[in-house]
Length: 100
Image (cartoon, rainbow, N blue to C red):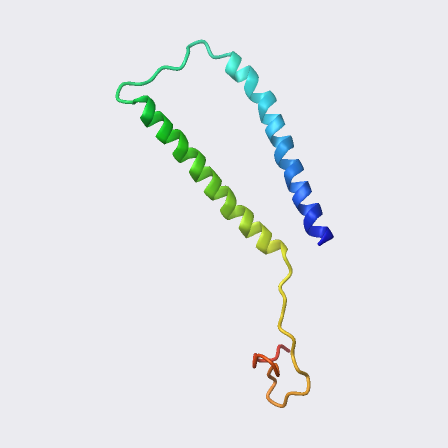
């Protein structure tokens, strides 16, 4: 329990520090832009909002996919309890083969 809380807090700290770093890196880039945003021919405001929402949604899904994968990779695998006295090498409650 203590390890998972520490892990969550460490992950949140890394996330917020990376966001802070990107904030300081992006401000000079935004200030260096000379031309204001312009809508290209064929794009509407609604189309830009849909594109923006699609980028955000796909980013969240990809991040969640990798986060779940890393979370599962870091958690220990638990084996079922084995009845050492079973003549067939099976768990007495669930009838799983015994691991050697």
